[in-house]
Length: 479
Image (cartoon, rainbow, N blue to C red; front, side, top):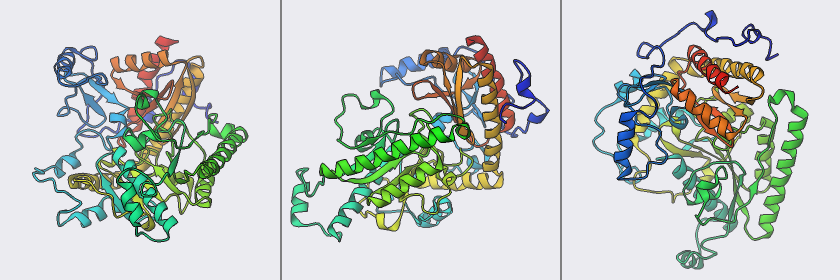
């Protein structure tokens, strides 16, 4: 049972114990150190300077990346913080990892990969991206970021679907002429089914499938595409199997209804896009059974199945790809990635080779060198096993705090260190985030009232206990 541990029996317990022996990396600091409020005076001055050039509304503080190491981010005022958010889950093995410093060299020339790639490009793709390709996929299209990865994956799905309708890939004269004025049949009225609470980016096509915050979409024209409900499950999942199965069945039925409705409207669903865990939308989970049945629905109706692993990919769930938890040999037609992968792009099956995906840079070859070394570190240091151990300790600690502060916390959940917990309300959540930062711990919010935990893969049990101590102190101040 999740409640029966020695620590849980101790009121207001501290989490550092013999079981949490410090396994500090040689290049890392020994803990947080706060010298000023955050943001400090230097950050405020720099924010003022930058504000005269561009919008600074989203900036938290300015960082000293030269001094940041391992799990610790240092700001320009000298504050050293345990980073449990890692730039929205985008730092794979901590700051200034020695193995990556060794790879660093003067990348003077950035090639236009679509037309003039370097000699070693195929070799480096094989060593990096293809060495961790999802099951059933041997092709990868590199891009620069998560949004452009999804945007171009959508285009690949549309092109595949249209060629399937034609029975070949040769457009008619009418197709060619009508597309130039944004009319059908050259610009067919296809759609992509997405899920309420999902986040897939903020470019035009991606924004039509993003439904996590109104501010992302406000005032921007969009497409009339179907939006299905994502299951609202009860946690812990193993204690509510019957209720959750009913909720997932309801959502799957709605998916099928929407596909039929949009086909009848003349806007067939060319693809379904979904995150293994809805991250920005609140760290919302669904069971492997849900995803298996959703995959079957896509296949039944001739729609491509696109799994967006931009946030979940790269090892944070304890497996390299979160969809591996589903236990499927054929999990998807397209898998997009970015963040911890250091570059963007999407894997796809042979039949979804679009032949018309292009931009100037098509990613950055230097990132493949870094990714290859990140993968070496993950294998050499057994970081996926480390993530699994740290994740169990983190989730157990969240369960204990949830029991200790039931008026503040609920619905602790997660896979690996990809965890979250709900807070009583939005205002309390935001206050907790700020007070944790003042005590030297960086966290992030998601959804309406959740806190998400996104540490690097080198976040060990020692760091978990350090975090839990600070988090417990912050919660005590809010109780």
